[in-house]
Amino acid sequence: MSAPLRPRPAAPPGVAVPQGPAVPGVPFVLPAHLTVGVVGAGRVGAVLGAALVAAGHRVVAASGVSGATRARIALLLPDAVNRSATSVAREATDLLLLAVPDDALAGVVAGLADTGALHPGQVVAHTSGAHGLAVLAPAAAVGARPLALHPAMTFTGTPDDLSRLAGISFGVTAPAELRAAAARLVADLGGVPEWVGETDRVLYHAALAHGANHLVTLVNEAADRLRDAGVAQPEKVLAPLLRAALENALRLGDDALTGPVSRGDAGTVRRHLDRLALTAPESVAPYLALARRGADRAIAAGRLRPVDAESLLDVLAGVHREVAA
Image (cartoon, rainbow, N blue to C red; front, side, top):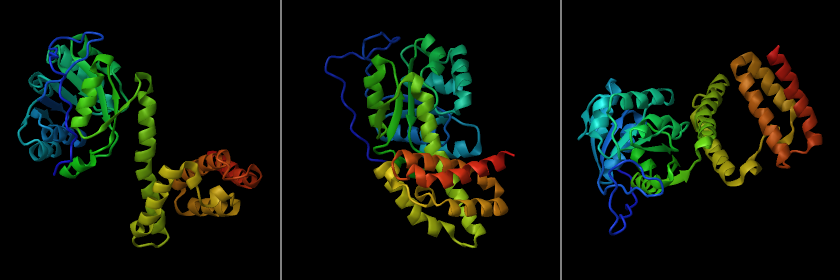
């Protein structure tokens, strides 16, 4: 299954495709059909590679050693050969996609540059949200064109992910001469570019991790506490409530706040914390932190009057001191 992808804008008539190192101020034009390699064919790399194939490009090689990665390559990139990272980089004459963990990225880039696997004119793009262009400095030093290209989406590494790419945002950081090419590449992937400054990459990524990754933790915490309360199928209870809360939050912002914190119901919150301390003490600190932040936002938004918040804030401060002790 593949996502509906936007048509690629054609290169302007008469514009030659640069083949050498980047020239400041001169826009780089991607070839109509790219020869691509994927280093790190995990959940993200394999899916983006498959989306590029669906857009008419050719993924010739991909790297992966685990059984799961080899299976993804066979499923999503059946025409790509499984090679070492160095071999993939050499075969990716137009675009090398690096989809490796954040903490491994710098070492991978430096290693590929040191072995001579990268070459001038090749676009070297990574999918890390936390990194920008600085981590690609060794690639740029040998004449490759650096690009940070992060899809704001969660991946399972299955064909179902392709349908989720349509219309999503990609956090893109690119040199000025590569912005038009980056926008076309994002369009080929079915997405929309969101331009992120080099110094803002970490904050951009922190926001996404805070929202998406912590949401998964929060949902599972709520499901576990419902099981503790005797609810056999907590997902049936949570699904309509959480979907409505998420939709309201995205549409209304802090005006979507409801519940005991937004009302200043200090007694209810105190009972919540007392029971959590008995049943699941590991949940007290996260509940406390989110309740305090929720109270601050409710007050700032005018949802909770400061006078009505006093008792609630006293409870939260008192429990915080207890937890710290």
